[in-house]
Image (cartoon, rainbow, N blue to C red; front, side, top):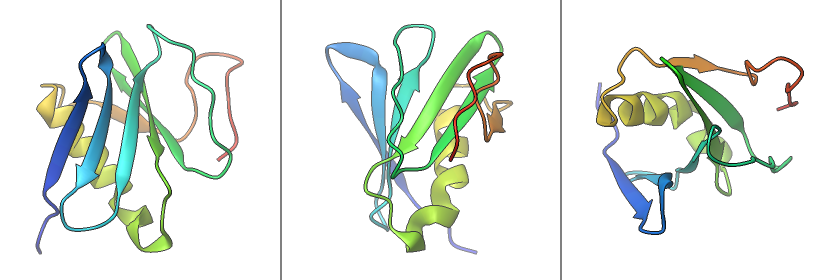
Length: 103
């Protein structure tokens, strides 16, 4: 089974604001660090959360196409390996109490 190749665009002004790009598809996923910024979700996109030790991330798609939806978890797993946190738990909802959002 072939795996997608992912590339990472980083923001030089914000080290915690990355965008994961799939080289093989149109998938793009924004990364936010929730301990450093307030996140406002886009109701037209898919959001997943990543818990890694004491850090909480949110991953939000950018102009998601239905063909790319199945690759989101693979992209997040790639990112977790990239930031040296392969044990990252991927969650469908914000694990902070009282902060659930609908997908």
